[in-house]
Image 1 (cartoon, rainbow, N blue to C red):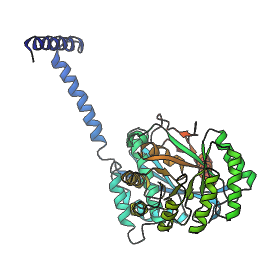
Image 2: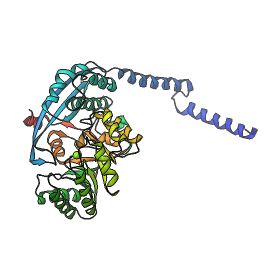
Image 3: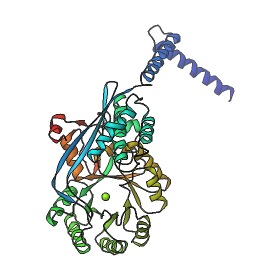
Image 4: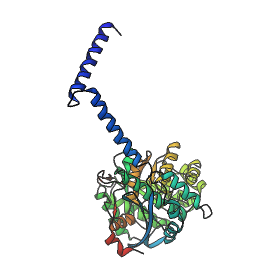
Length: 413
Ligand SMILES: [Mg+2]
């Protein structure tokens, strides 16, 4: 440093210290400034100390059974009601909410087993709670009901932790984006063609530029329904189809050719998700204009790892109400990153909105008719897509929704 530069630097420093000393404190002393800084630091220290251990006081579980507004079916299943298993996790002066769409048996498993594993643990230590729950179901098996039960509790614990800090969950996790694109999903095989057209066109008119319909009840009938859907949504909206594993490999390949003609961009579960070689075959042989997607029955990381290692999908799907909650969902997102593939959230939009904004490789989430309807019936604070995107309300802590107890009571089971 030149002598003249050094002189200028020392002069500037002197001015700065004079400014701090004379303007920061009433008595003008730097010592007083430092004292105040120390007090602030102590306050921060006190805050962290008070959150070092917040025991989980209580886990409660309840069941809500909601009849569908119209009989619903896909390529391989029909249903007339949906069951939501809700967990409320209490710690400090807050209660976190989480849920799964599952069977009543899931609620019994939470009540009889998982509750005892989690109560008394530290609400700050979600990985510790998660690990304890996974250990506890070793002899029951990880897939299915066990993982749905863990998911409901894990989701409630994330909501609880964010509420304890009075932060929206996306801020606790760290945002990758401010909002998450959605696709309208329904178009059940039980719908007449006019019903199908009305629902899909309705989403497009509401500003959602991508929609998904169910197929798989008949090869010829499926092509006709896809044509009718395209006619209803116009040439520009993206059209997705989901066969729920209904086709054979050869059927799926032939159908992919037909669907590409109608501009279909996404072919979900063309064959069973368990047929990883079949998915890979279709992915390799079908037009590059159509993407193969699967993953909704993933209950653990190894499932996703196998699917990705097999090269079975162009886009991996995961469901935080099945795959071990928000903890498992974020792990699946990391696996996608390591395979350079996009990620998509399956159904339950109120659960996936915040974590969807935090998961780096996420492309979109499924705005599923059945769950949208249930979440509006049971919860306050469930957002509506604007311009095809869901944006968390950052003024609301946690995942931002509250149980409408009086309204929900009539669905209690
Ligand atoms: Mg599906």
